[in-house]
Length: 287
Length: 178
Image 1 (cartoon, rainbow over the protein chains, first blue to last red):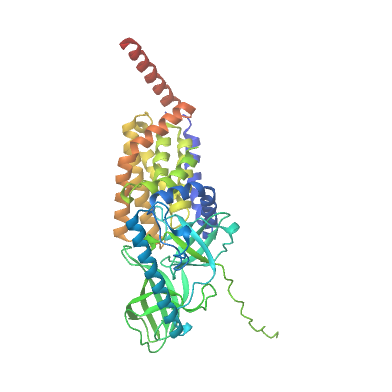
Image 2 (image 1 turned 90 degrees about the vertical axis):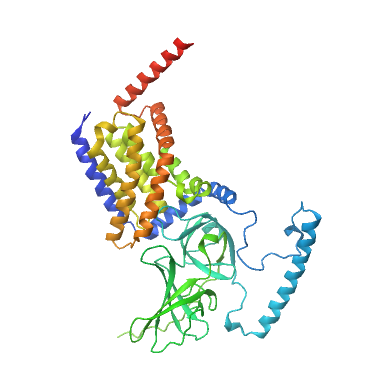
């Protein structure tokens, strides 16, 4: 049975050493490798993603489909659904006009702005086994996706691109432990850093907003928006709502934030293509 | 071929068509099946490659699932190598379930040791669902892997000879019946 035990005695420790060496591989390389694997499997992933999702997934952005567009109408519909469609279309137009009217009344700094320019992408891969919250998208570098680009879903921030393959990419969701975004409380205008977090028992994921201030007049339920200081997202995009406020030190505050998007329901996203503005930092004088 | 099949199944087919409680770690099932029917070195190579695959697709720390899989394979070899190498489906099935439990139990333990903070509730829940999935999909996976290895003649010589003998006996019985 044991024909060559010496060879086995050498093989097993070698594999263990090799697996220990894998810990030295940087996370970014693994992400790129995963994105390339998704690029290779893209047709199959798109097919399986379409079979497993609902018949008409929610669009990634609000207002990207024109209700008067004839192509948006289903061709084979009966009279009842056609009448219902017309009623809903009329309501949609009325609501849009109301939104436009409200926008003229509210100043742009309060966050009611159109989505920044970007491209639409479908989710083709979700969490497998023990993976941190990542999603695979069907757009890659050949379609104009760049690393670190912000990602939105129906007007709210959902995450950031962490790896780009040729025809697919991976995004880390807001609750990913390595996620860090410049954020601001919408009412009291205090800025901080939003980080991904998970509870001690790992059952629920949420975000943590770290703020350094002597006094904080935040309230539970207050909205959190992007501050625009991290160079990834423009200011004023919705991130989530405060659910708990903790004072962790004399000048340290920790706010628990529930993300605006339910990551399990995200089927298509809006990847931002705006380049972050370059800040003209003054050159340090030479000594 | 098994590696590509595992990649496609784990990345595309299983998440799309199976409910969460029935999604197995197909890599470790195939790896343990190869370990049961092939030579030790070939089996360990399969466990290593399948671990790499699982690490790339579904690990919070690259390399941890590979290490856990290899440690689990080592434990199985230590306890039941002679029984496992007989080429029976039953023992290979038990090894697959035990391998899944050991791999993911070790992943949680080692992950907590290196600061991944895998919660107890999530660890128990996910590991149990993987064990249930291994109980459901273990036998089909072992059967297909075994038949493929038999056709490609990459089994260990003892198991190959035993399976060939069984096949001849079955053919003979069938001819007598006819």
